[in-house]
Image (cartoon, rainbow over the protein chains, first blue to last red):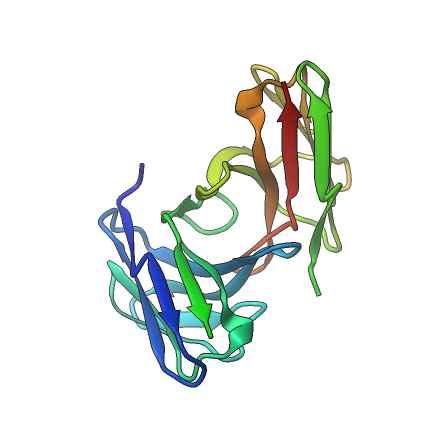
Length: 114
Length: 110
């Protein structure tokens, strides 16, 4: 398996609190992605990064921000968590652009917002 | 809305029966990838299709990319209990954005 670590793996928090999920890779891959997975919706792209300090929005970016200050770390922040953000969050990495590179996924972070 | 759709959402089959899941995109894709996610696990890459009309096989799995590069299918022959999981297609809808389909959850009844 690719060297991808997500933390925390499980988190329960209350509405209105800030939450940061971390994705750490040891593969030196350029592209990193954050997805959320919900029943009936599959995997939906939140944000992605195509290099250090280079990020862009995905299809469900509202309420989320990201940062990538180093190649190996991609942080996903919920500034003020809401119950609708209860989900399983997956980080993925890719060596190449979307037309050539497969995605390698982390183990996932299960977030519950009460 | 979701730009890559899959059907069916769920499929229950008896062990030994065949299974097919279909993927449709609202836009032409430069390539399409397929992933498998076991229950409680994370998605794992299976294959990538690039050419119009391309067909690839992996043992009992057959993958096909449509002539217009807007649809794809995954067919499993003679399912086994190890095939249980959710199968996703994914494609680069815009730029660097890799969009996933809604997935098909396969249950195999022994």
